Length: 115
Image 1 (cartoon, rainbow, N blue to C red):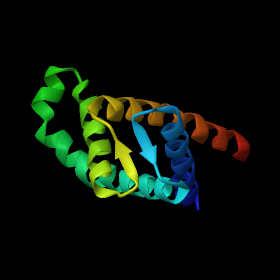
Image 2: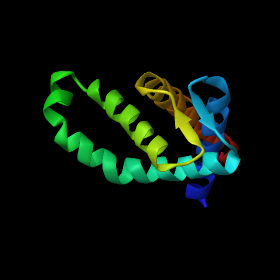
Image 3: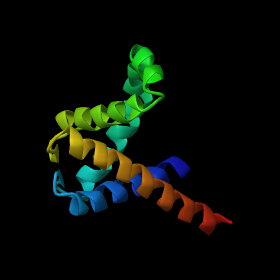
Image 4: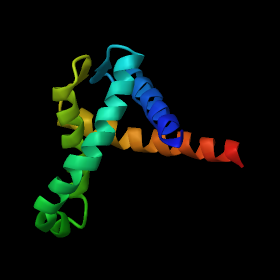
């Protein structure tokens, strides 16, 4: 149940950010939910592989290269999902950063409601 609620909140965050950022477009709320699921799967499967393969450059940049990896994950989701479009790497990086912030705000509001 908790996982489903987190996916719904991520879908809401994706939908909100598609209206805020001009370089991001989502066809509808169902597409935003699909983006949330695909991003979760990509972060579970592909991201650890990319982190291991780019470990030397990640260490050299003191972890800042992980931001680029997050942007690449967003671009990969763009290629996999019809109805979700990202204009370029810069918008993917901004989207990734804002999505993380919005997710933490929504999840903290959820934790306050439970207690």
